[in-house]
Each structure stands twice: as structure tokens, then as C-alpha cells.
Image (cartoon, rainbow, N blue to C red; front, side, top):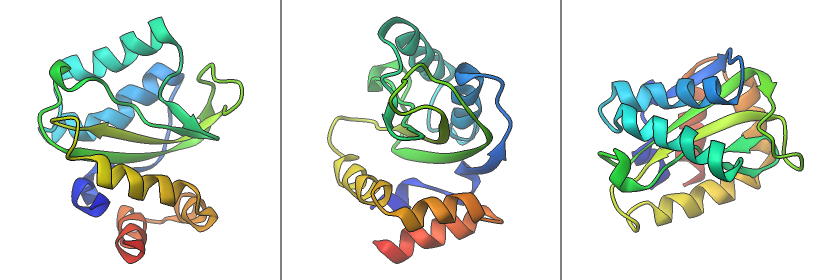
Length: 148
């Protein structure tokens, strides 16, 4: 379940980011600090975005920073970062990005059910209201738990 991937300390609210690269680094830092990914994993996300374009921008205002498992995904985890000021990613259809869901999966299958739950949340307008108005990380995590 999605709530099992997300810990309270992986949720950051109203973070300042100077550009898309800074936003990725900041969104990934809780997973790095929590031992779920390596620094190489973060570098690979950025390198791939530089060479392939903003592949991580999955829908309006939403990015899903991730990289292939072999580049330093140590455990199944997801962080949620909301930005104080949305940033341009280069994806004209979905910019600016305001919400980042940094993900780490240790294989190609264990995260699939959780991803389906995330897709459902991303089609729920109330979820965006929760992201925008949350006073503390548990406000978001509790909403996710309630919807499961």
C-alpha cells in the first residue's frame, strides 16, 4: 500500500527550490537521509532528465522523480514535497511543477500496487487541496491512509 512507502519524515511542505534540478535534489533528500536511495540515484534522475527531457513530469503540476533500480534504489519508498513557488520543468503541457513524489523501488514489481493508488489520488481534486493546505506532514499521510 502507498501509505507503507511514505513515512512522515519523507513529507516536506512548502519547500523553496531555485529550479527543477534543485527541486529534485530537495525532494529526494529525505529518502537519501532515510537510507532508501544513494546520492548516485539522485544524480541519475537529473542526468536522465537532462538527456531525455522532463520524463518525470507525469501530469499537470506533478513530477515523479525516479531512476532505474540499479542506480542506487535501496528500498521501496516515496517522499512527497510541495513547493512554495512552482518551478518550470520544460514540460510545457504540465508546467509549472508544484508537487514532487520522489520514488525508490528495489525491483520492477513491488511498487506497482502503490503506483495504482497514487494514480487514483492524482485524479482526486481533494488530494490537491490537502497538499496545498496541510499544516503538517501527517495531514497528508492521514488523507492517504483514509483513502486506501
